[in-house]
Image 1: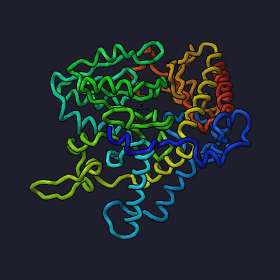
Image 2: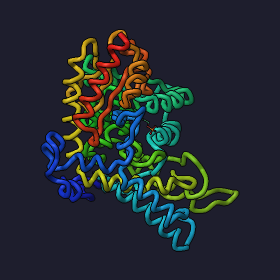
Image 3: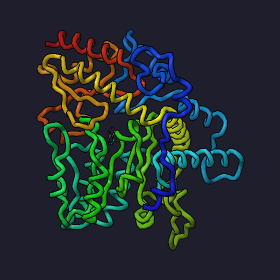
Image 4: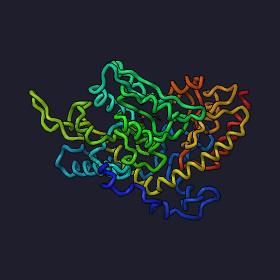
Length: 437
Ligand code: PLP
């Protein structure tokens, strides 16, 4: 693919920020990377607050990431000094806003190793997947066609395809998982029969943490002429991500999980798809000329960006990308893997605790239940101890049905968490378990 040669690899290794923070870290907090993770943590103002009179232990980053000061300051600076709409005004503020917004698109393109004119900026994964459903799938699919999904999808990667299936007469097939929470790849490939036109799956499961081998899966699908869509919501925040190398057709992700502002995200798509797809929403910005006898649409990606975008949000997301690049995604990945190993070992010693998902390649997410205790009760009592975990179905009803449970607890870790926080979380869990049982 041509753009594989056009861009340098986006993650050249530990960068200035990491180096600036080397050494002097407490035991366990700087291991391996040379990064002082306590100094990194100090970049997150919210993490210093208390909840119910206890220090906050935030273990819900798979839900949304906390924001470093650099992100908060970038959005604040835009509203204080540059606020104007993009692509409309010739005055200085308009130019500054447009440059900053398009600058953020360029940063995102470099970060994910793709071309900026293949990046549609939107409100998040949900929007991005719906855009593919309505603009690509709806005109392409018909009766007799099939869409393949997996058992571990978030509702955002199920319901848009159900809407498409209802309107086109296409059917949906579901690829299953084994007891570890990994995809059964042989079974999946056997399902990729000639009527399958589209395969949409998550890169990383938000419930099980399973990292799917998307590169290999996309290669198999492509050999069969099947279009692939990857939901990268839980991959982008945690690991070096070279979208061009995956070989998919579409890649969707959300900005708020990678420590950027809410209401930001993107869809990457191959240029040929973007050129052929009709617009999803109509309005300002997405046109070249409007006449009552016909409208000429703008080129991609602007063709898919009707209306005023989340300008400050994307400037903040650009700052988030700078911040993550400064730490180095490989360092973030290693740090989170160490936190995951520590937490898994500690939780495995808790009587009656069952962990859902033990994939060989796993992101820093642990879903669990304690026999005899309801997930919401555990999460509510933990909250009183200052520990924020999520409980519920995690927008993955079909996965809950697979395990035969209505809900689980989920602790998810980010690089700004500490080993001490994990120990405090497990101690609090033992305490609340004893209250409940
Ligand atoms: N897909 C996965 C795997 C997710 O974890 C999430 C968010 O929890 C989404 C999609 C939806 O993301 P958003 O709500 O930002 O559109």
